[in-house]
Image (cartoon, rainbow, N blue to C red; front, side):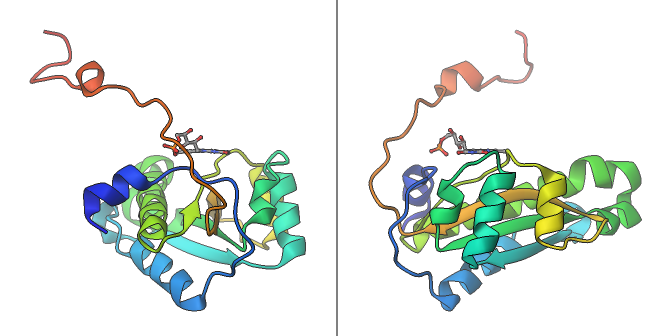
Length: 175
Ligand SMILES: Cc1cc2nc3c(=O)[nH]c(=O)nc-3n(C[C@H](O)[C@H](O)[C@H](O)COP(=O)(O)O)c2cc1C
C-alpha cells in the first residue's frame, strides 16, 4: 500500500472479527515499532504481547471498562523504559523524550497494522498502576499505550479532521 494511502486509511478500529493474528504479523508490527525515531537513538521501548483472554479482560477493566480491548485477538502494551531515557537525558528524558519516542513507535504499529490489512486503536485512558500489576511491569517502566489489534469487523468513516488552513502558520505563529 502506498504511504499516503496507508495514512489516510488508518482509523481507530474498535470492533474486530474472530480471526487470529499470525506470529509473523506480530513480528512485523514490532519491527515497524523498533524502527521509529528516538531521542539520541536511545530506543526506550518495550512491548508486551497479550493474547490470554483473562489478561485481556483485566486490561479492559483497567482501561475504564473499554470492552473492545478484550475482543481483539492481540493486544500490544507499549512501555517506556524511564531509566534508559534518564541515563542519557535526565528529567527531559523521563518527562518528554521517552513519551515522544514511544508515541512514535505506537504510531508505527498503527500504520503497519493498516499495511497488513489489520485494524487497531491507540488506547491511552487506563489506570497505569493496575496495568503494571496485571502485566508484572517493573517500577521503572511506564505503560504508555494499549493497542488492541485484529481484523476490522467493519468500515469506519474518517472523523472530522481540522483543515490545513486552520493549523498551518508560515514563519511566525502570529502575523
Ligand atoms: C494519546 C491517545 C489516546 C487515546 N485514547 C483512546 C482511548 O482510551 N480509547 C479510545 O477508544 N480511543 C482512544 N484514542 C483514539 C482517538 O479517539 C482517535 O484517534 C480519534 O478519535 C481520531 O480518530 P482516528 O484515529 O480514526 O483518526 C486515543 C488516541 C490517542 C492518540
